[in-house]
Length: 222
Length: 261
Image (cartoon, rainbow over all chains, first blue to last red):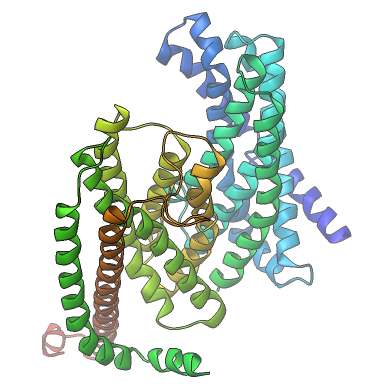
């Protein structure tokens, strides 16, 4: 257990340090959100209707952008081999790494959501709904994205291939995340229905992600 | 015991090539005959009282849609073969199946939207069944991109196997999407509890077409596997050749030697 705690502490420390690149995700999130009003026009009513979708897309792309770093840095300096060979089960180590990545790169996105909500003319309930759905949904993005990151590091390919592999897997999270936000703001559906499916997706990816990532690391690294 | 023996026998690519060379003509002939019968029966099937002649799209659309899911299941079994049993032909099977599955999925989407235009009044509707099949299509393309991104086939095979197994979660979602969500696409009418709701005049051509399409997949898949094995042999011969050339080139450092080798 202490090994996993140490791994989490180390990953967070590295991510927040100079050159870690966790906070670049937030900057990217901000930039994408600011870009949107230029693309669709500064119509405030339209922006408040599109707001949850824009925020979700921004968060999805931002978390995808930072995922590239999840295993590559460790692979380059050799610590990934030590993690694979250590006595701690690789599945748990992968889960710990993903958790650390979510704390360092996912939580700041949720903290930034209220500020960005102001830019998109979202009222209090809407902002709260988007923040709540992001809180429930971003773990799923991180844990499914980890599978892509593990594949990318074993193949020595990143970037576009990672995006092509991970984005189809994250479509359900996007669907139910935006559906829950819309339900809280206006929709005829109760908020609880899509929100609990979103939580279920997160929990399922919490189980599947570490096993798939560990399998691909174990079979792929040489 | 018999099955494992057969599978171990098939692990030898040379034996596999010899066996499939004998089987393939028969399979191709059976596919052609069944397709001809199925197409004839479909053309002769009566018009639906509501849909008119457009109901005949079903005889192409439904087998394509079934196979789009069936091929991913075949690839999932092959992925298990790669990861668990390290069967030497499993990754060949998985690689050969991906483009065929993508083609079936694409045809299912195209015929579906051609059918949807007169029936629903739209080519595309973001309902659960259509969206999940579209995701399946994207995953087929991603998988093919993965196969193409990596030169070493065995390394690509293990990565693709993990991705295939993760993507297999989508298959039951596609199958049951029409039951879980109340959407535009109609619920299952052939394979369901309490028997098929389809009339016999439509059911028989559909079943024949389904078997014909399955045979078509098996034929194409075996042929593609043969191609892949031969392609890998050519690749390893080329690499042997290249290493011999560079070796002799180093030894005597003359361009003549390269020409001779």
